[in-house]
Image (cartoon, one colour):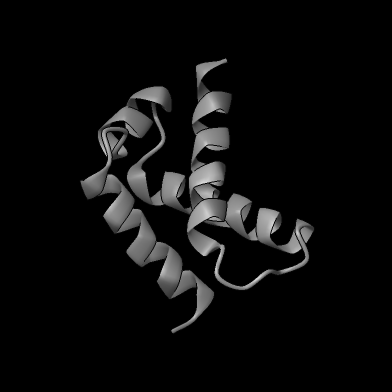
Amino acid sequence: MGATDKKRGIFSRVSKGSKKGTSDIKAAHHGINEAKLNQMIREQAYFLWEKQGRPQGQDFSHWVKAEKEIVSRGKK
């Protein structure tokens, strides 16, 4: 399973299992559809992963941090 596939799976779990799911994220980004938002988060998570030296086993934490960063940008 590639990094992109892992991120899609994590996104599904985060969206369904957390209080801040896709509806909260969409609300923070008026006019951006879910696919575009997902791509933005995926790219930011990848950037964070590379910046930290490509550590193994931290994909979920990178995804969550990227999601928070993207959402906070939309609220400004």
